[in-house]
Figure 1 (cartoon, rainbow, N blue to C red):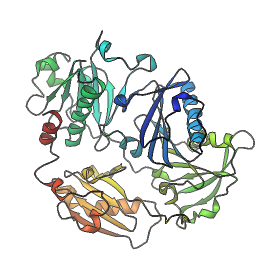
Figure 2: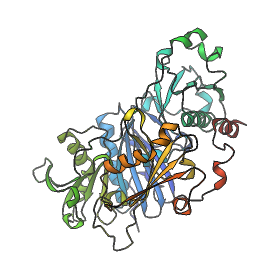
Figure 3: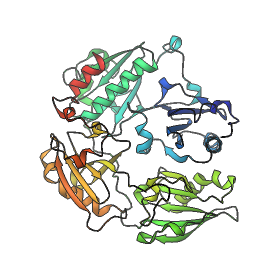
Figure 4: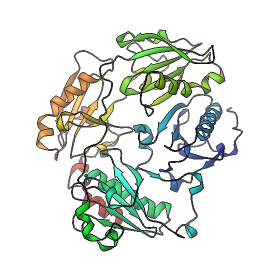
Length: 475
């Protein structure tokens, strides 16, 4: 029987599958209502617990860019309490605003929204939320994992390549200029509908400004200096971060020593030399998987205090190696390792269950000679975007899926893009790993089996076009 958490705010953990979210409020946890899931105040810290099924938990603590050091500390302490209440089995993840993991983003199907302010901004009751309302402008950005960030409500914030949401309280405008992407449009509309119907309980009305209305709606443009201000809007920019960083380095395994009070790390192995038996149950280790993130492995013999320091050790490692603060840091416990961790050890075999590699799905583009990748966690068939080339990584077989509406260059370069992906990847795999190119609507059974509930009709009749999604959302 699991221990009962001392904090009453944690009373519901472990009782049912799904997502629970808390915000740090003056050193205490405040449950976030389900209708507000996906909205984050950038001055706060949050904890999210996802239960996939009994015994399979992921705990994420999310840090807004303006969160205080004290809030970060409370989040770290509370995650340990959650950890204890669930028998010490959850995998812990550290999430930084604007750089969240694909797994974290997958919980919020309508995307996530960053709001200025912190706890004092509060979640307001419906009846008083429109008092003294000030306009808010949100920038919807991302090829695959779309984030909505609050920006200054000024024409200088707009650009022709992205979707923006103007929130006027009772009225919400989704501005979709001609150069904005299909997925950004769909996600922007879904985010606005979620605000109106779920957060506001139907008290707001959504207005869509697309290819016809985007440059002439008088109400929308009145907040930016009038319709003539459209001439001041700058062009869109391809400014997404390049996913493949630190490509020339090798994967490394480090032993953590905290005997002196200041954690030190000692190199154990690197490259293809990583083996399971190099991990010692009495110690903690850090696995630097380059673009796969930083993993802090905690042996069974480690103390409660050592377990609580895991993510702090991860942060210290980032500082010592001059890595970006937003690098993913994940804590894993001995005997509860995920395949995201074990996949880096060529000889790892789970005695309890066969250690099957979990396929990875990526949206890939090779614009201007720069390979850009976004991973999609918990993927389904609906994540296959007909406008793009996708890569399904099944370890010793790479599938290149070419969407029907991918541009000619992407279609022509699809195979080369997959080869680049394979060359730059660091996973231990068979040297004769093959690459198969397949086309939308011609998927073989061996490919379809990786997607739950495959439906051949999904790719027919423009089911996922912007126009059809607009009808489904608002009619």
